[in-house]
Length: 278
Image (cartoon, rainbow, N blue to C red; front, side):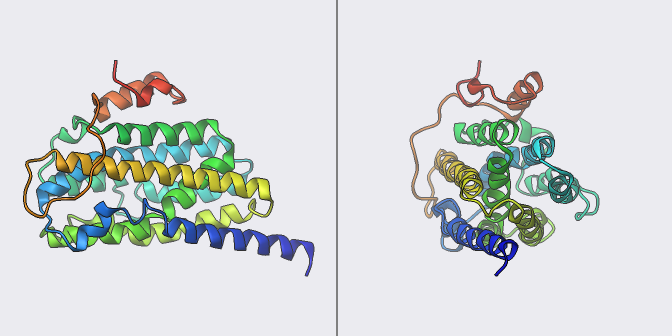
């Protein structure tokens, strides 16, 4: 076996092991997701969930844009750009993914700019701050681990649970297109990210950086789902509601407040972002 072939095999084995670790992470099988096929669901449940999830959708392209600035060469930039083109709407009739998500929010009764004024759980703001700081300020492979394995490998395992709940709540296929599209698109995106990772993932130090980013992202995702559970349980109790919760929410941000802070600090390393609003 040549050195080059052996190096590529080591990278493939590492990424296969990491993919299995991602697919079995607590964030991917969180109870909020796993019980979608069991518990009664309503549009009101998904209005709450969607209001918390929408800021993550809005900020995802910014993570990729930060990585483009730190990518070591044109080949890495090309793989990232292919994902960005889809996020900007290439694969969804020109609708960027935030616009597609707003169609879902309108179907569950949240529209007319309301989505920008929803009180966000601190775990939502922490998720955004952590990913922006990782992609803008950490080594490239840590950021690539966060948006590749941490995001694009996890979505096709998480979203089928949501889709089942959405359909049980009576939402039509047009309303849930954001979710069904992502199950398909993110398989492609995950494969593209894997090609980017293969170029770097043979050496132990590079593998550690990629895994650090992936697990950091997934840990934040698990906290995000617990934040969603908190928000759902804050609604008046009803039979069959979501079980489980963490401690109550602190003073909260809105998407408008988060974006205003980011406009002042375009490199979002401000530790105060995830704390109490000023």
